[in-house]
Amino acid sequence: MSRPIADAHCLIVADGDVLIRNALAEYLRHCGYKVIEAASSDEVMTALDLGSAKVDAILADASLPGRFNAFELRLQVKKRLPTVEIVLTGNVDSAAKAAGELCDEGPHLKRPYEAEKVVAHIKRLLAASRRQDRPEN
Amino acid sequence: MNGSEIAAGQGSTVRTQTILLVEDEFVIRLMLGDALRDAGYHVLEAGDGAEGLAVLLSGQPIDLMVTDVRMPGDIDGIELSRRSKASDASRPVIVCSGHLLPEEADPADAFVSKPYLAQQLIDIIERLIGKPCPDQSQTRTA
Image 1 (tube, rainbow over the protein chains, first blue to last red):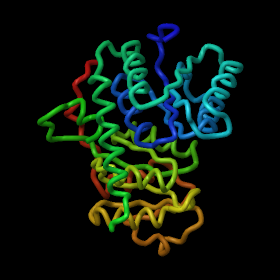
Image 2 (image 1 turned 90 degrees about the vertical axis):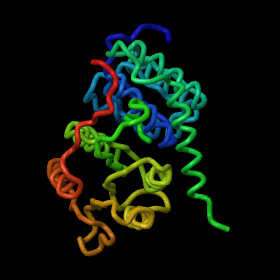
Image 3 (image 1 turned 90 degrees about the horizontal axis):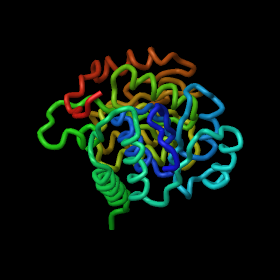
């Protein structure tokens, strides 16, 4: 992380996969953050435009869908809100690791559980969802 | 297993009721998600029917689903309601729409006509699954 964000209270979790997004957001809520869940870069921009909460950091999947890709999103946000930290993640493991770091810097002094458990949880959910969605032979 | 249960580890017997909220309009989803969490429920948010179905199929315990009807993609709120009832007929479903007539909302257990206040929705949820149970699985310290 480029700077400590110990005073941060609101994060955006942006990921096109609902199971990953839900699990990361849930973890960060347990860490004491207010979390806005965004399914696309368009929703991230809408959340920032709304201004209903001061957003301190954005945890975004590098392959986030939407009008802007994750890298363009970072440029757009930096132009408008230079103090907002954007953490780009490439897979479930790196996303959970980044969430764990945010948790360490967050409002609570203690992690609710280890980030590795989030990874295992997400992988179980993804496997169950894919298994159930597979047509029967 | 949801995040609360991960935090609790083994042996948790009481968990807050979980609501799956499926709404493609981001601002409405954001507002309702906050209102339901403030009311004390655990909320899983999904941005369209396909996301809602992925959550339903993931095996997480879901006590009630709230869904919009008109959403982008192949699965609208009515089809999602049918899929939810097929996987668990006892799980209540609330359909919200500004276009549908109540009698068209089958197989939902309740219909809410848009626009509506968050408190109206919370009142219906309380009637269907009760007031939120205090989550006894929290292990973190504030």
